[in-house]
Figure 1 (tube, one colour):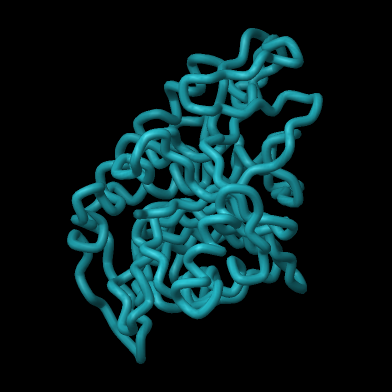
Figure 2: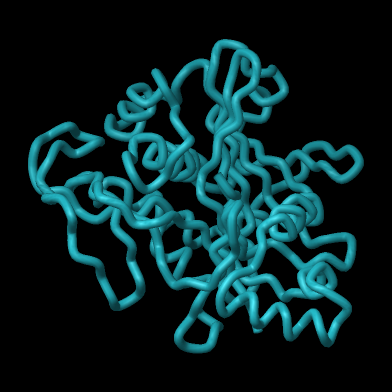
Length: 310
């Protein structure tokens, strides 16, 4: 059985609501307010931080009711909840929609093809890292899609915590809202496409993570993974030149690496998060039959959404 993983957080009063498939929570605050993109006061729609199609894709082959895993520092549990918040008006949701639709067509598909990777041509390679030319794709749409996910996470008040673009919020708002606006200066968006693993680790092509942030000296890194691609957005006055050279918005290049590296990081995260509830009982059964929790994790046929703990 495939077990996708999905990060979430506890309900609390505010604008964030849980989406549990056909079961919807009662709104705790009015939907009226300024749209975060156009800034016009009015009714805001329910905006998913990650596109809803990604969730549908990762649970498509799971038995009903589909319950991906939610991985947090304190526990790993099974849940079918998605994270969303009242952020955008109808017009702005529709503005972002074409970029999301295009990304859905070129990221790893449910039946296995990876159009983005297949549409690139090699430029240079060293060890496991390969630089590819993505000029044959609509890289502008992909840049705006990747930036929009991280921007939504940054401007959300309840759905995502611990991530902020700071003064770059406004620059990316203008970039996403204004037709033809250039990619912000002092920023670089790098896309890592995941190639098949070289070891016996399971592939990571259907793993999804919520955006997370890491601060460095002179710049910060914001990243998320989605169906075969890891987007990195670097912002700040001292972004290393290597990331600027690989910026998708300026060079139309991407990187490709075996998914082993990604899975190794995520495997460590899973093992540090104790299983709870139904998932704990399943893991206990697996451990009794297969020499422990670590062994059962190593053999798990990964599904999709993994989340880093906060």
